[in-house]
Image (cartoon, rainbow, N blue to C red):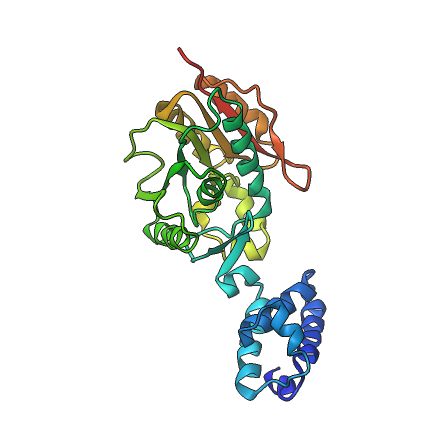
Amino acid sequence: MSSSLVGQSIEAARRHVAAVLKTAGIESADLDARLLVGAALGLDLTALIAAAKRTLTVEEADRLDGLVQRRLAREPVARILGQKEFWSLPLKLSAETLVPRPDTEAVVELALQMLAGTPHPDREWRILDIGTGSGAILLALLSELPGAIGIGSDISLAALLTARCNAVDLALASRAFFVKCNYTAALTGPFDLVVSNPPYIPSQDIAGLDVEVREHDPHLALDGGPDGLDAYRALIPEAVRLLASGGALVVEAGRDQIRDITGLMRGAGLTTTAEPRADLGGVLRAIAGRKLPP
């Protein structure tokens, strides 16, 4: 395809790429085309508009063609670009991290609600993000809570390096710390808030996931065991151990898992009076429990 792009204007190339992606059945073809052209040329949206009539060089056409071929192979645009926006924060990605999704912002919203409902909502919060990945949830919370400090744990050192890089880029590194361990094995607490987006896809459902997820997201961050609840069984009791009195646990849930997770939280001694938070699609996505004083 690169030969057909040489000498085309930037705007014509964008339209051509969009048409190719649409023909391949990619729903977000127009947006993807703009992002890929911008990445190939090193231009943001404003610069693309300003340079719309400039023609592509051979090198630019080859570079753009390479990106388009990756997208046609169903590699997510976020992975091609190496970053994704979450909670209006630009986050770098790596092969060992999930692509942060808008659904997960429900966890941030509910976590902020749980903190606001305490007797001292302006205190210097201590936050733990279990399985932090790119650091999306933790860094979103720290960006909203200037006095808070947080720890992100993950079993993957590569993921932690990505999260640390994001913390530095967002000027949050002085309040964000990262620990390599399985769940909470290396931690003692106490924490005012524990958050997590654990793996929750039932093992038998992995093969049926969209290829963009199945082939590009790390399986360790997807596979929740036979019923999708293995991670919750492990992390909920550990979170209760680490929570301060009055502290809250907020986790992301898969479709139709709220009832089971509520039962696990109650079984571990948490109260679950807060309403679960739905994502933009109306799916109940975030659930919270609070540790009451003895």
